Length: 205
Image (cartoon, rainbow, N blue to C red; front, side, top):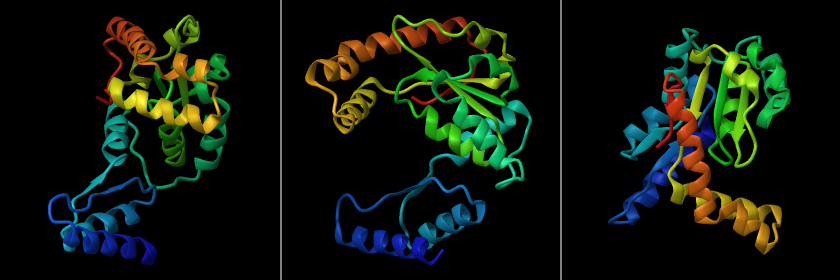
């Protein structure tokens, strides 16, 4: 908590020195008390802030009718279950999940899955990839459990370029992964799938 407060105080201090842009605090805190403290501290020192994941968590909770409650007893099991179902693994188990996230690569499916798992939800995520069909079991899942993730093409390209460099992709592999034409093509595929399944709530741009 002390470290959190120091960070916010530093943001306020730097914001006072930067006349036009100021500082902005974006936070994703699993502990509700920490998130609430961050909110009040930012308000006290006049630092613009935004809780990134809580609105998403609450929207999902309201949709599926299961309220999150801090880090429940079932969290370790849920996290283990979620990790084993990352990126389309074990599609035969999709019916056992509380939540299924669907979207193209680098739309934040994995970090959101782990965050939700910390709340005790069993989460699977499925990637939409050009030339690769979605698992048939996805369409056997209760539709209210499925959420579609979208993102702005420019933002997605930037994220993919950074990711490709981190992974040490060669130039030709990087082009295929982060080329704008390829990015738009994948997003168009995702949008066509989403249009066929309008019941799935959308998260993102």
